[in-house]
Image 1 (cartoon, rainbow, N blue to C red):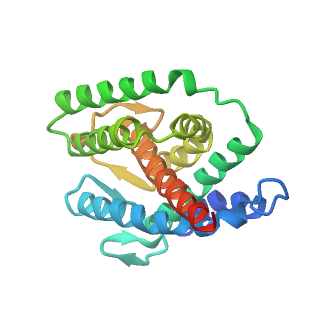
Image 2 (cartoon, rainbow, N blue to C red):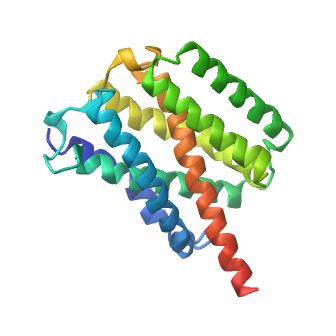
Length: 228
């Protein structure tokens, strides 16, 4: 069905949009801090996406997209970089409100080091696989920046949101890779999957969400400083 990917995008953002008006979280009041980061991170990831499509790292099944294309990318893929980060920041903000205990704080440094070590191992072992190399190269950079350069104070809260977001991630990416809407060239990845999802996708998602959370907190903090 041509509307498959578009429908996935719609359902991804539908409930976060509706629940944004919850009287306690009041997520709608924070939308203005989300969109600058969405555009910046979206631009970065869309360049990555475009290069990967023209170099046959992955492609999109024309049977499941509407047929509206920009720079070799279907419209739905562009929307993906709006709907998914928006939904994940919604999860992040809800957890910040409802889960007061910072459960990952004692483990944040350990998690940082574990991800850095894993990234180095994957880069060394799969240096000739483009998707693996780029994914773990970016992951190493963003975790090193957040954990050790900027010392991002919300990183432990982010990890909680990321692990919770894996539930909808498994559903959405499971559908995209099972149908499949997105077709992967296994010569350019580690050829290891969780169900039908390439292992790289889990860490690609981590980098995408963390980048958006970093921008979200930056713009929110800048606004708070102006108000003060």
